[in-house]
Image (spheres, rainbow, N blue to C red):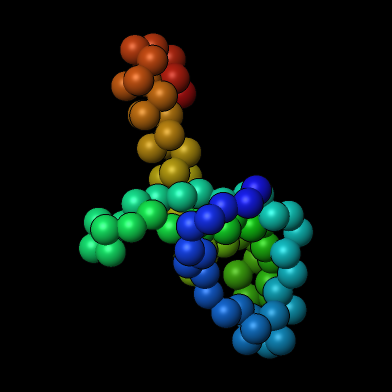
Length: 91
């Protein structure tokens, strides 16, 4: 996925060197609006693994662990239920 938006990401060279970080899949990017900047940015999304954290998602400069991902799952289900009117979307 190509974007003309500025990319917001982090240098993960320390995690790569010290914790054997590897990227297993590049999943595109999300493009949120940041009100404080009054701008849209691209946050690359990657499935990664390292010796310290195990499996996690990198979303721009943020690392999301299993607990964070569960919150996202619940949030997406609530969004689906609200926008489709189907309560079964919350499961």
